[in-house]
Length: 196
Image (cartoon, rainbow, N blue to C red; front, side):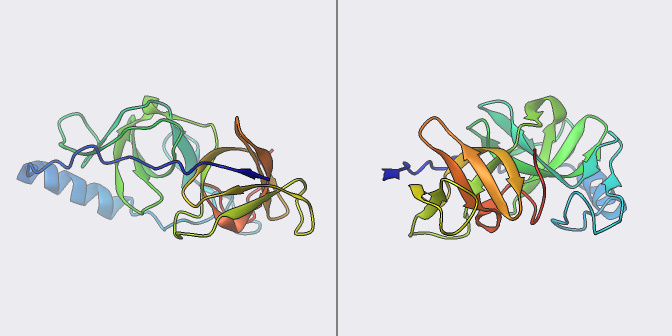
């Protein structure tokens, strides 16, 4: 059996202590009130319902991943807003919950939200293995079923590329392993979302 190494999710290089201007805070409050996200709804919408589209013409919410190895996350949609934290690793999955001009309001696996410039994101699908738990590793299987051979175990919080998802299972592809994991054990894909 193969054991995957724990991959920590270093995202907060520093916390900004600066207080945004009153005008900046008012603008952020207005944006939040006007376009309040509805949570982590399935990007494909309810059965038969069309997904909500953002100004870009793409569904909201939707999962993407970080393109750069250093991404400033701001308190508002613009370079004039203070940096609240910095992601220091590429390929982490984030959920876009709102769009404003060329800025995207994202949510990470901890539920923390902030604004990043659109070019720092990419449509490549990645996922975090069970970020809500600590401890026991989760099995990766040779086929998408509970009786298939276990080919690897992944620690919670490991990040991997998602190749496909179907029937409640997702195929992960990494330099060290390939295999299937239950979709409910991942953050970065919606329940029952089909990815091909």
